[in-house]
Length: 281
Ligand SMILES: O=C(O)CCC(=O)C(=O)O
Image 1 (cartoon, rainbow, N blue to C red):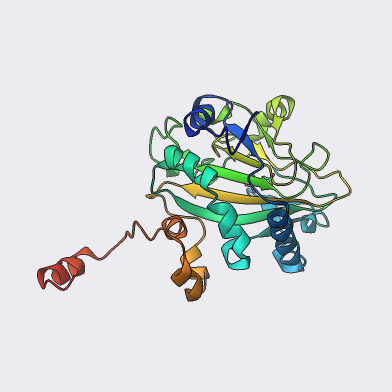
Image 2 (image 1 turned 45 degrees about the vertical axis):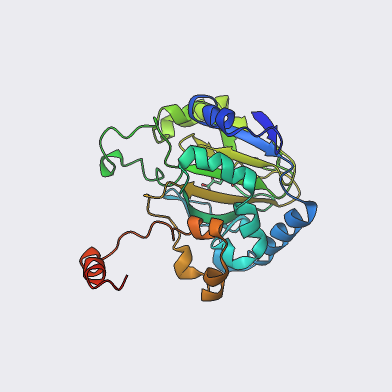
């Protein structure tokens, strides 16, 4: 995987690699140790209850007993300012402006905590393609000639092969196909791994086949998972609905964009016309 730093992260080169190359790049050194520790501690604190365990993934049941070893925490913007700071990092924003258009938005911001023994996932692709195993529910001819997704994974623990660093199949984003059970051997035989140190950031095109792998290490493996989409795609999480009004009132221009406030459709346009006609608006 090509590695960049804040100084070398050229959006043109990175977007070329995401679309026509391997589909993933790593950017090192974007975050301070205090930010990484803060984000990790908040995710750990929010994933200690039984209620947040993942019992199914892509329709497949996770074995009873191991299900609680993989935990998801959603709606992270409500769980600490550090998550807003990470999601709006200027280097990430610059890459995504080129990749998804300057008014791109956020589809979700969640964490995946794999405890030791955590089972990992099946190979899959991400929102809004994550139900592309039913291609006839999508527009005909949908392909990967342009992106409707960016995934940003920020490692909050050492990401090693042993600890379950995300696996991905380089180049698979170009096919725009949901991996089937028959594809699994090919995937596991040919996958690369998103290994890295805490704070390393991987940007990838979520049309590339990928999955969390089993955590065979003796420590938790926490990842911050941020999904970004073009302005015209309906987000996965209703973030404005889930966030307190005080958060929305204080949101930065970048955060307002990510929450979709710059592109307010659907609107009731006959009402808007009436207001316009009266010269009120
Ligand atoms: O946690 C990971 O390594 C990958 C997570 C992922 O791909 C997902 O939850 O969709």
